[in-house]
Length: 102
Image (tube, rainbow, N blue to C red; front, side, top):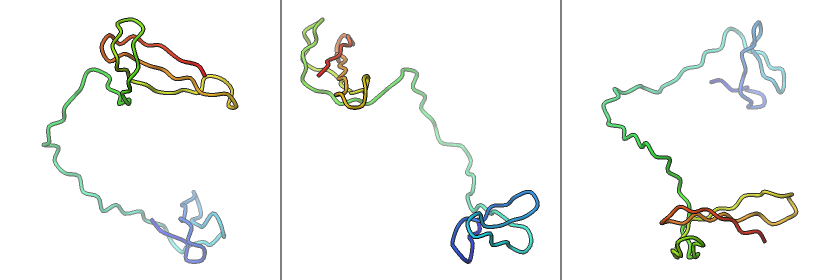
């Protein structure tokens, strides 16, 4: 990757002309982009997880269905921006999901 010697922007290669998009500096000749990254043999084992896993914080909140006292929780802006977000809860035991408005 090459940078403009005048303004420091990344030089972009266009169809006919190479140059700086900011100050119109044009380089002499063609530009080259060189990568020094080496590709290693893929000998490492990759674990595949079939179930979708998401990381949510666990809080003390009583489930309305099974009365378990722990639940995952997250918030989503379901209404207009000037109103409070909606809290969603999911029981860690029975996976029942409910919401709370403010």
